[in-house]
Length: 189
Ligand code: 5GP
Image 1 (spheres, rainbow, N blue to C red):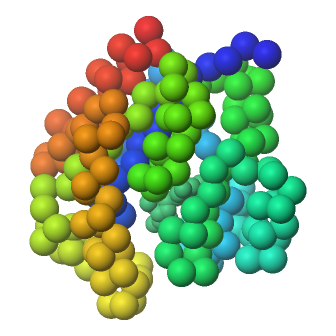
Image 2 (spheres, rainbow, N blue to C red; image 1 turned 180 degrees about the horizontal axis):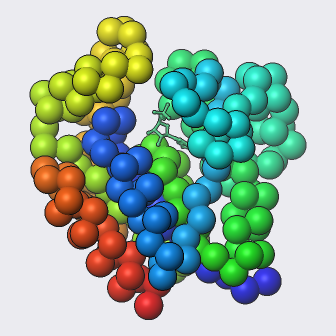
């Protein structure tokens, strides 16, 4: 099977990586398809099964772990599991496309280690932890408790930025989108 490239975008929750990933997906010449992760968390807002995530039960998730179906998985927050199914990459590569991931820092680095030459691992950096708090509050899809959990994790994640191939500073979204486009375009050649 012809192997495409893997574009990993990782960042603390609220950094704007999802917006950047969606922007890249809209650019046809990049020939990207989104890696749909499996998760045991509930769908929020207008999220759809099979589009944003494969929403599965905790039991089902644990069965996939046992069966060795995941390329990587993480308990990103307590009882909230997220993982990339091996079949997802095979599905996308079989179509002759490049795979783009919106996943957490640990998962992103794991994919880079597994596929060092095929992967471009990009860290999206928020202006500051305070700004991150404001963004998560504006998004207001989670409770105060969950927001605090995400902020606590963000400080740890920020420390891993130097392990990525590239860092994009998301101080201005339009600039960040353009930076991301240029990086991906150059990498896929
Ligand atoms: P959210 O609940 O906001 O959709 O995602 C929470 C975190 O889990 C985000 O950082 C998101 O990128 C990450 N995530 C989503 N899918 C995966 C995955 O397949 N593997 C890993 N390791 N993290 C993921």
